[in-house]
Length: 298
Ligand code: UTP
Image (cartoon, rainbow, N blue to C red; front, top):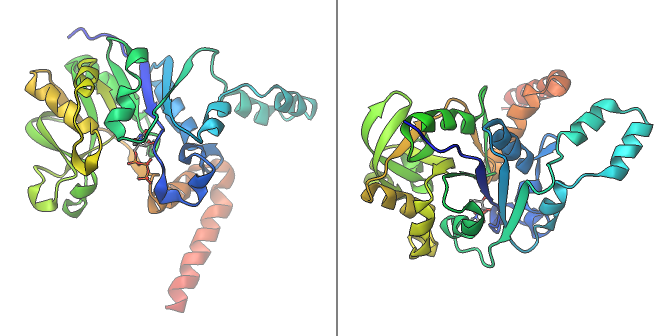
C-alpha cells in the first residue's frame, strides 16, 4: 500500500496537570525531569527517530518554560566550552532544534485532548499526522512511534498504540473493540472512552501515540463534548471507522510508563535510573539496601 509519509507531529501539552499540584502551579508537567531530561525531550527524540521534521506544540497559559526549552543556549555553551566540558556540551547541543522546526499554537481553554489536537488543524493541513502524549514515556529498543510508522506503511489509515491492561483499569483508557487480529496489528471496529469493566469490549487500551488521517481533524471540527464533558479524540477516531477508513491498534514492543500519574512517574524514574550506566551501580545498591531494610523491619 502507498501511504503518504508522516512528517508532522502534534504534542498536546495544554492540560492543567492537576495530578502534579502543587508542582504544576508554576512548572509545566512536560518540563519535569526523568533522571536529567524533561519529559518533552523523550517525546521529541522519539518523534525525530520516526522521521518527524515538523513539531507542533499545543500549549496554554503558564507553559513558557516549555517554549524556552528548545532555544539555543549560547552563554551556557561558551561556559561549557571554556571549561572543556565536552560531554555536557554534546548533551546540550543534542537538545537544539532547527529554527522553524517547532511551532506553537495555543489552546485557549482546556477542553479536552480532542480539542487540543483540533487547535493544530491549520498547521497540520490536509495530511496524515502523528500525535504524541508526552506523559506516556515508552522505553523500547526501537522507539514506539517508529514501530508504528512501519505498521502504518502496511495499513495506511489510522494507527493507535495499544496495550493490554488489567480489566479493572479499563475505565482509565480508551478501549478497542477488535474485529480481526494479525499479530501485533488488530483491526478495530469500535472504540469506547473510559468504559466500566463490565462494558469494556476488550482489555486492549489505547495509549498516547497515534497516526491519524486528516479527516480526524474534519470530524473534530464538528465535535460535541463526550465522556467527562470534554471533546474526545477517541470519538473522532471512532468516527473514522464509520466512514470506512481503517483504524488499527498496534501492540508496540516496549514498556510504557504513565508519567501523568505520581506512581507512574516514580516507576519511570527507577527504571530509567537503573538503565543509566553512570547511575546504575550506586542506585541499584541504594534500592537493594532500602528494600532489604524494609523487609527486615517487617
Ligand atoms: P491528561 O488527561 O493527562 O490531563 O491529558 P492533564 O491536564 O495533562 O493532567 P491532569 O489529569 O489534570 O493531572 C493528556 C494529555 O492531553 C493534553 C495534556 O497536556 C496531556 O498531554 N491535554 C489535555 C491538552 O493539551 N488539552 C486539554 O484540554 C486536555
